[in-house]
Length: 236
Image (tube, rainbow, N blue to C red; front, top):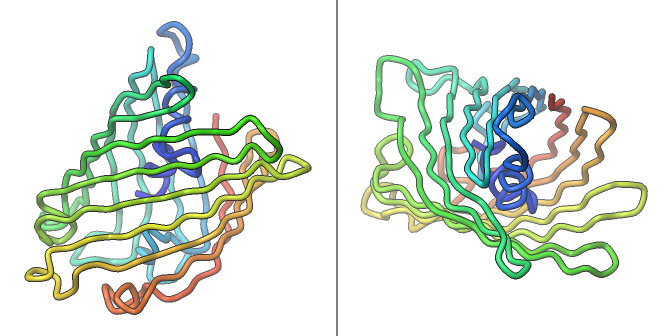
């Protein structure tokens, strides 16, 4: 899930990536692939790999602002599922310097339970100032009527600040709020936040990050405590 949200928000992850991906004619240049290794698969402040390493990979296609893709990752056993497979699509563009996306995602957990699968839909906005460090602000919102593990209605709000640092390093700050139906989950929601430092070398991307949640995040699923994560990925 995290890679997809970062694809869409590309301010860490939402609007820029699909737009850039969609340039050009319909040919093999519109296709891309990615693989990654991370020391902990952290999604919205919660570890989905039980604080262990995870491997992931995916494929993307874009044309004239439209994009489609799929992405899969190993996860810690939930019911009898050990793999997450995500399918997503949408449209991204720019209007007077403001980038935007309209997004639809489906999270699929192959196995016998069938209770974990769910859809999300939403969008994002982003704006970059043409000044020193190229500060980029982003906001995204995703909603599901039948969330993870049957949690019913839930909504996620994400805010990002990205900076272009010297020597081609990138900095990103993220604040998010995951809202739930308290009658189903027992809490109204939780806050999470994090920072990432990234650097690209050729086809490789290296990211070193920190994330944490508030008290409700630590209670939900029991694995929302502070984390330090290193990720190395490659795109083709």
